[in-house]
Image (tube, rainbow, N blue to C red; front, side, top):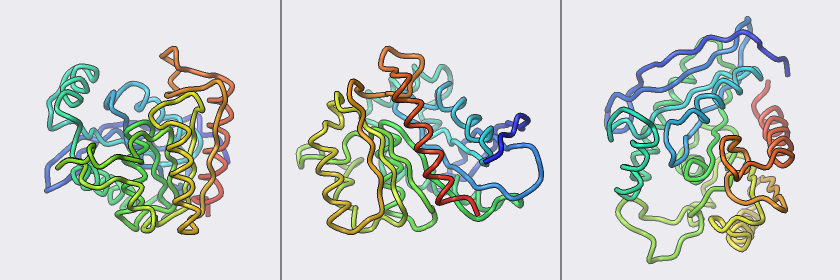
Length: 249
């Protein structure tokens, strides 16, 4: 795929869950042609610098990219402070995330220079959310789930915000899935990743899982001690190859 040194970036307003207006960050590659799309679902640290930069990275690689602020209802200000408030409240409802993400997908599909294909991408809680979305909606063509915690959940973990364990939704997965995991992670643990993959195999779902030794949670987070450069570079190359296969026309 070509690299687009030039791009335009801006905030847009979309109508999220229950018609609530929320902000989304958009990066569009320069040049003519029809581009595949990627909808990014941010992690529990929030609508953070990592996710804004990652949105631009996808544009650099020739994708229209959008990342909605799923925590906007909680308030503005420093993303770390907003995320801390969301974490203290037990996260956001899965159903609200689906409504907000659906709005981002609809925005993508309305773009005149879009090629008609949409991938969904998320890490940590965003990986879990991306998987849920790809199971509950039929409007995405590929899903990248990076170290998604709480895909496997015990009954004691279920509540009004997370009423169904994502693994129970596997039969409804609508598209191919790539998973990136660290073997030193505990959320998800290697055992949970095995359960996740076994369920995908049970339902004959197209998937690629990659597991990295010497890596825990947050392998790609360059701003944290969790960062594992070699694993991150390999994981990035695998995600770009996966999206290239399923989203490029």
